[in-house]
Structures are given as C-alpha cells and as structure tokens.
Length: 554
Image 1 (cartoon, helix red, strand yellow):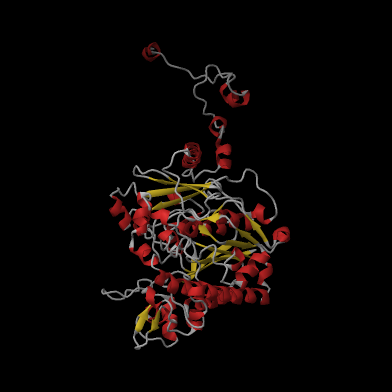
Image 2: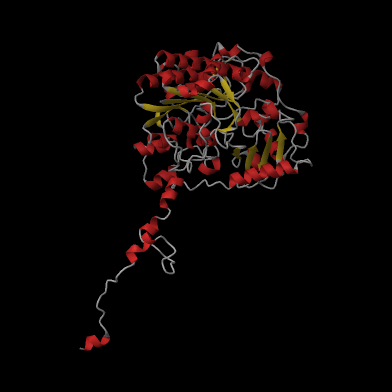
C-alpha cells in the first residue's frame, strides 16, 4: 500500500464542481471523488500555512506542536509522518512545499547537522526531500536571495528563461501593452497571461516531478506532493488566463451588518490592506478569474497524474488523498487571504480514494462527519498497517468512514487556533503577544470564536445563518449555547497532549512493575499485597554473627 498525499495551497473547499461551484468545472477532482469519499465537513487546525501544515504533518493541534505561525520553527524531536511510517516499513517523501522553518537552535544544541540523514529529516518535517520548493521567490530592494536554491528556478533557467529569478520575471508576471513587466504581485495584472510556456509553469513542473518520482519509486512509500498553486500571486499562463471572466465571479458573500460595530478583532482584520483590496469589486473581478484558472490548471494536471497511475497499474496499490492547507476569503466577509474562521478560510476540500475492496461500498459518496486535518496522520498510520499512537497523534483515523463503518463516539466538535501575534492587527488592537490568540469551536451548527485579551466571544448559528453574517456573541439570549461551547473548549483544553513518551499500553505495562521487583514501601505487615510479592521477604532469617563490644575485649 502506497499513499499519494496531494495538497494544493489555498484551495477553497467550494471551488470544485463536485462541491457545487456554479461556473468552475473540475472533472478530475470529481473523478477522484467518484472513486472515493468526499468529506464535506473538514477543518484545518489553524487557518495559516505554516501552522496548518505542521498539524497535518504531526497529527497534533497547533498548541501541541507549537509552530503556530509562519516562520515559527517546528521544535526538534516533534514526531511527524515520516517517523511514524518508517516504523511500518514505509518511506516518506516530499515533493514541493512544506512552509516548514527548521529549529536551527535546537539542532545546534543537540549537535545535529543538516547534512546528515537525521538532520536533513529534522529540517524537512520528517520527510526525505525528493524535490523541495516552497515558491514565493521575491526580488526586493535588498536583492534576490535564494537561500534554498529553488529547483524550479533552476529548471526554468535550463529551459532558457534568463535572469536570477525567472519565477518572478516569467512564471508570475505578464507583459503589459507597452512591453513592460506586469508583475503578478499587483492585483490589477491578474487578468494578463503569465509570460511563460504553460508546460513550464509551476503546476505542470511539479506534476512532471511527481511522475518522475513514481517511475523510480521502490518499496512502500508515502509521497507528499505539495503544489504552491492556486496560492497568490494570482496570475496564470494561457490558455487558463481568459477561461473565466467577471460573469463567472460569484457575488461576494458579505453583508453590511458585518461592518456595523464588528467584534474588535474582526474589525482589525477588515481594515488591513489585504481586506481593503478585496473589498474593491475591480480587484475581485480580476483576481477570481485568475484563481479559477489556476484551479482549472490544477485539475488538468491532476488528470494527467491519475492517467499515469492508471496506465502504470499504480492505481491498484496507491491511496490518493487530495486536500488543502486552508481556504481563501476572496472578498467574502469583507476579507482577503485566510486567517479567521469563516467557512471560506477554515474549511477545506478533502477527498480520499482507497483502492482496497473494503472501501468499495463507499465509492462516490459524501461523508458529513466533522473531520479535522490531523485525522490524516492517524489515517495514514492505520492504512499502513500500524496502530495509531494515540498519546502522540491527536487525530482519529478516517478508515472506518472509508470502509462504510460508523466509528464509536466520533467527535461532536472541531477545534481551530490562530496566533496573530506577529501581525499588524495585534498592534492595532493593543494586545500583548501572549493574548493575540484565537480559538474556534464548531459543533456542526454553532461556531464559537474566543479571543484572548478580554474581548467578548463571537458566535454564529450556521443553521439559521449559513453565510455567517450575524454575530450573536454580544446579543442576549444565547448564554446557554455559549456556556455549552465554552465547556467543549475547556474539555479540549484539558486534553493530555504532552505525555508523548509513554503510551497507554506502556502505562498499563508499568503498573505493578516495581512491586514485582520487590519495591514494597508502606506495608504494615505484608498482608495488603498478594503473597507472591512478599515471598522473598518471608521464611527463615539468614543470620549473621553480630559481635558485641564485650566480644571485642575477649
């Protein structure tokens, strides 16, 4: 059994035709959904790239692994998919992006060098890197600094694209009417075609690398194929650049009431430059068609990958998982990017195809159970034939759902966290770095958002208000619902998340071990314990001749 774990960066859950998008046809995502199960209620554990990915890779909540924002290192020693799967005889490979920041200080403290096997794995989220490229290769006034030597840039240079950074000059830029560069960093250029041959753009390149990996892979493996797109810069090569126009842009899901006395944290995010840009209709009318074009290209390349798996017979022994690290507001709720907990940001697409016969009964179905991204780590361990180490991995295996079974006591709420301590919004709100944290609790109907720092809660009823326009957190009459959700948050907060060096089985094996070794303190006469534990301490005494002081004078 092999696992192809595909992630698209910033792909919204509802921008697939199998999820009901009215204008964007994604036949290959739909094809995979017909082969497997589409989970319609899947949520990330943090709506920001780095923290979310570290939760996927560790199977742990953001506050458990600690890497709660982009650039926060994942501490040395945190167990990841690679660590769990290698115990089962599976290799764990990376192709593409991780957004992982290495714990350089921790590695130095422990004497780990990145040019050793263990050091390299610690630097790559536990993966062996087949080819890593995180994208986003900027070129600012301080010059272009390619600290990781982008393999995609090297590929472009080998294809004749000149300059130090063809990622920025060609793959993510167009040409204006005067022959000047029209950078994808500027939203107003989003309707231009990227100045690159389509087959050389990022998504086809990584697809080709994945096919190259598949053709040489041996043994059992997990391959994490992590595409940078449809993440910004929002620009795409022909023919995808003009497949969609303003008429294909869904109306923004936003309401004037959201801007009337908003929650202070929400208000701060609505006032940032990203949100202000996406509040402009002319921005949405250019960006969203490009975003849709990027997704259409992703779909075509997924089809190319699925065709290759079928042609080579690998579809029969490979589990395929397609998901995203978070969504994209695209102007909904007067916001851009991700960060907060409305559905367009925190909810993700998740499709799983399991080739084994046990999964035949669920093919082409949709599962509406509350799912967390950390469930994938548990699923992969079970799919690989292992027992999920529940003292480390906090997610739950989705294998029962894939096999048409209903798990015992499935979760009744999901959790997501967000640390905005390094953002301008913390400064605008005047809160401490420690208080710049948000928590979401969602039970399938009510969504609570708790903000540290003395703020009132936010509350949405997604049954009566599916678009999440009306914040009930400051209104009377919802005290019982708030109390129930806060109890769920408290229950989650009391979880045993850090006892990672001893499993429940270990603890059971440890019970009574010291007594069987003869360590028996606090006994009155020995009758309190089984006789076998004291047998070594009963019976005739072994006497020794004790000399008295008088003996010494004799």
